Image (cartoon, rainbow, N blue to C red; front, side, top):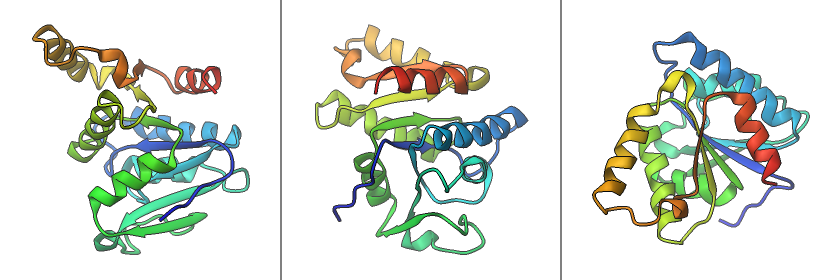
Length: 186
């Protein structure tokens, strides 16, 4: 599958739940607005629930494309956002990650669960190995990802991560700083 969209495409890895802090949902809605206001395409997992649903609801499809990438096993009306610009059905979660990464120019990781962590680790490994070279912006709302930052430092101190710069990983604590970073790196 060789699909490409005009303009900048931003992939957002995020939770299918809203989490315990209501700020996460508000900020994801705001992130969706900012991505579309900059005329960037949004590549995401297609969900209508949780943070995925909030980013989709905040996104203005009249400005850019909202692209849902969905495993066939999750192609269910009750959990998917009903009106993406484009829905791409894939075989499984592995193919979904691959497509999301390949179609994007930048990747933002919001608070999320095991799936979000899995997605982030995949792109970090691909960057570290030189297979990809995508900037990965972690939206560290209310220090959600602080334990992960500490784990990365621990991994580096123990010489299991020699060149953390190859991971191309950046942490910001607000949507505004995240958007500004992408604008400054276009």
